[in-house]
Length: 189
Image 1 (tube, rainbow, N blue to C red):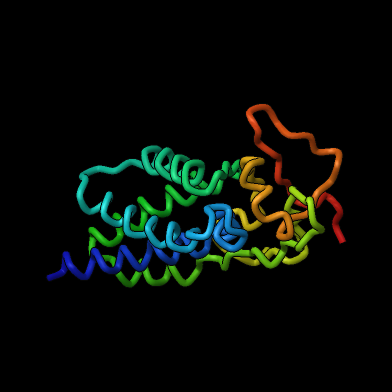
Image 2 (image 1 turned 180 degrees about the vertical axis):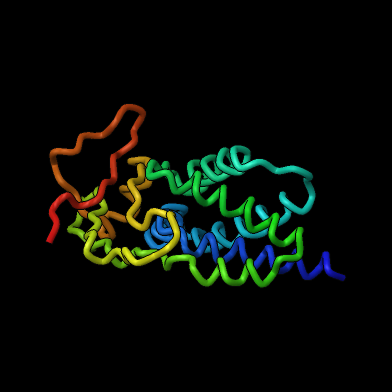
């Protein structure tokens, strides 16, 4: 019986961790995964929970590889802000807390997760392919080390699917293999 409550507690923890991850929530919000972006994010919760519960000794680097692969394959997204590493570390830590039946500590840690900070993104003009982040919207009081303003790369083929959701600058050429650089705004207010 304790095992069943640990599994559902872990599923809830996975959901909250992924919901706090700005890069993933940005990808969902802007439809980087196509019309099924939200369903893909929900599937990630199920896949991660199942993977941990069906395998013994899942390591953080394995989770990191899995997350990078899913983001690239399902959302045409590469995240380079170290958040994939941090999310992987949190997933492993929170799974261990569930396994050790430290559910109160888990709940306390979940309360300290930051909210995804996608409100810092501005809607750009048509033909835009850069997402502009405004750092003044970031919650700097968060105790978690999950970066709130990611630097992400998205396939240029996916960028053209939602040009109204993004902002472009002409000084950012396409990177080799059809990838576009999506960076945060360098102008601080």
